[in-house]
Length: 167
Image 1 (tube, helix red, strand yellow):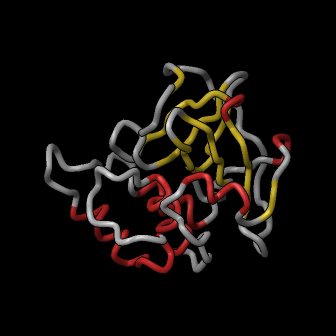
Image 2 (cartoon, rainbow, N blue to C red; image 1 turned 90 degrees about the vertical axis):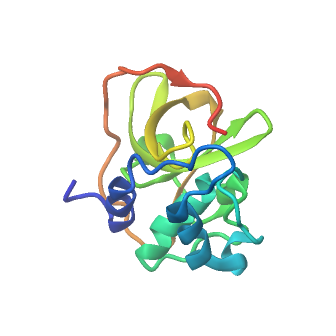
Image 3 (cartoon, helix red, strand yellow; image 1 turned 90 degrees about the horizontal axis):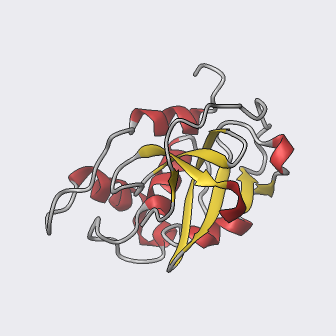
């Protein structure tokens, strides 16, 4: 949408990017990691079988000149990045951090329904998709420091099942 921040518009252009099947790797996802580098990711990233939701978020933000969190590959590290937002202050493009079995997950807010946030994120079913993730799993709602919050919460219909594990 025209009112979306640039980083969210970048993220939308990546919808349906997928991991490569089997032991192969997606050149696109590895390209994102290469551009970000080990200083941002906190590790040498060389396989799309390693969770890449944080790689996706960092790539989209960096494309808009926004410095990502250090150790961006670790989803829960995003819980202290930027500025905290109250749930009623959410706007498209907010970074949401979730708990999940075995780790965390991070993606961008695009809307919500009564029980779930609609999240544009990487590594959701091994692809960039929009998934419904239960609100009670959300541990942080963040916004880039120094950028004005543009927009307001977006109500959406609950048309898909709630995701239970984004790894």
